[in-house]
Structure formats: C-alpha cells, structure tokens
Image (cartoon, rainbow, N blue to C red; front, side, top):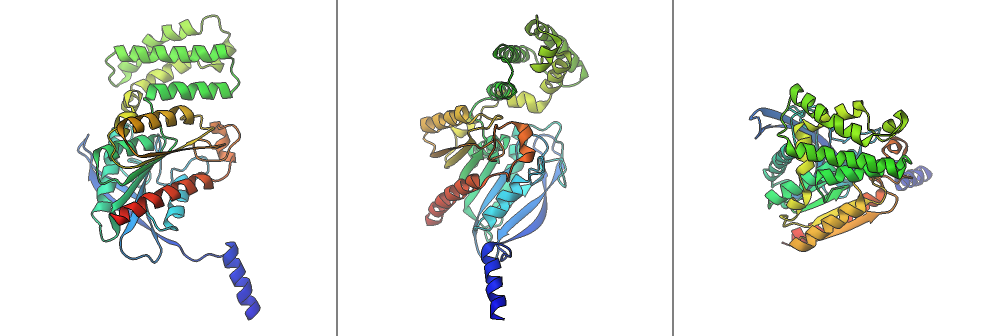
Length: 370
C-alpha cells in the first residue's frame, strides 16, 4: 500500500496526474451593435481559478484578424485555450469569445471593422464589471494578439477601467506600413530577388495612393472600377518581366483583381489608415508589448520601437520584450514563415506565457494595494 502511495505521489509530481487547477464554463450574452443596431449573441468560455473565492483579477483575450473562434484556432493550434488555462491555473479569470459571426456568436463579420471589434470587447468588459463579487474591477486586463492588440489599445484609450494592456505581435504603425513590411519580409523569405521585391512594394504604394484619391464605396461596380484603375499600375511595374517572375512577385492580373476585391471591404479601408499609436498615446494604464524576433507578419523591431516611442512621448508606462526565435504565433521557429506554423510546437511558447504572467502579477499586485 505504501508503495502504491509513493508511485501515485511520483505521478502527481511528474505531471502524469494533476489536481484540478481551474474550472471552465460556457456563457452567452446579447449586445446591440452600435453600427447596425442589430442584436447579436456573443458566446465564449470563462475559465476560473479552482477553489478561489471572492474577487480575482481577470483577463479578456482579443483575437487577431480574420474570423476567429474563441481559441483563436489556427493550423492545429489553439493559442487562446493555452493562454486561458495557463493563467487560470495561476489565479486569473480569463474570458475568451467567438468573434461576431463565428462559432456560437452571431452578427455580421463581413462588414465589421477593427472599430466594431473594439465595441464588442467593451461589452465583454462591461460583462465582467457587472460582477464585482467575482472579478476585481481594479484588476481587469486586456490581452490582444496581432489585430487584437490594436483593439485592446482602442478599448483602453476609451475606458479608464482597464488596468493594463498586454500585446503579442501588435503593430505600432498604420496598416499601410505594416502591409508593406509584411510583404517585404514574406517575399524575401521566399528568396525573391531584391529587384522583384522592390517592384512588388512600389506597386503596393501606388495602389494605396490610388485608393487615397478615390471615394471608395462597396459593390461590384466599385471592384470593377478599382480593377480598371489598378491594371495600368500592375502593367507598369511588371514591364519586362517573364510570366514566372510576375507570378513570383504577385504582379499578375489575378493578383490585381484580388487587391480590388480586398480594397472595397470596410475592414481593409479602416485597417489601412488606422494607427494603433494614436490610441496607445491616450492610454493611462501600463502596457506590455511582446514581439517575436522572427515575426514576419508584424515585424517586431520596427513596431516595438514605434510603440516604445509613443509611450515615452505620452508618458505611458510600458514594458517592451523582444523574444529570440519567436514567430507571430509566439512559437519557437526556424524562419518565421507562415507555412511553418502547423509543424511547430506549442503556440504560444512558454517564454511568452512566463513574460505575460510576470507582468500581470506585477501590475495585479499594485492594483490590490490600491
């Protein structure tokens, strides 16, 4: 009997078995869209520290661009499930939701913009604030990944109740600049010749300039109009290239039409001009910005530097962390290319989780004292 107890103790210590450290519950609440005035259902999961009574600090997780479920599921990974369970096992309530129009949430994703997503998160914040017996209203944090980092900054700029904002792979520059950086990194990773990369970037700059001069609406007629406006630019920048070279740097007629389709969407029109720095400047809570050295979607060095500058100028307390060999999903990687994601380890890596927890604990302790 004693031997069995010793074996069981060893298994518990080794992680073969583990005591329950958090509980999980599904929730649904209704909100009214400030844009369409339609009633939407927002569904999600709330994880809570097991056995903890009274007020606990809480974190709202905010997904990146595109239609995302509550786990921010991508290529076999569930980053938000990993983060939620990690934090709740260490004393934090964590709220994560399906995006509007995704999973069990309703609403219009097609016409939604970053600003609409910010409104959705404000409703989630209100949901937590209405339950002060469970969640400490002085210690409610936002964690945003990629576009979610911008959303977090928007909400924090508007709402003094936010105790702190943490970002992973967040931008510090406007959408046009981020897209140019992203494209340059992606095409250079493919080994494209410098001259072809420059043609690609020059064409993109011209596309943005055309959109700035047009009053862009929505609909097929506008797509056709934009496509006709873009075609001469593509022809100009592809002059002298072989068919293979045009395909390599994305200067084909098919790519041209794809840009026209993208540019008429409300999301893209907002993204191109929205600058997270404008909102970070108005924040009055601490900020943690984590970037991966090999992030090819939001380049860490350039964007973390921009975030640091705006924080310093506007006296926003910030912690900047750039992690070696980490990609946009927070994974340890080889190159940072998107096609690696599926074959890499946990997203996000333990180094990301540890930095996040250390920062949260520090700010949370200050909130408790106040």
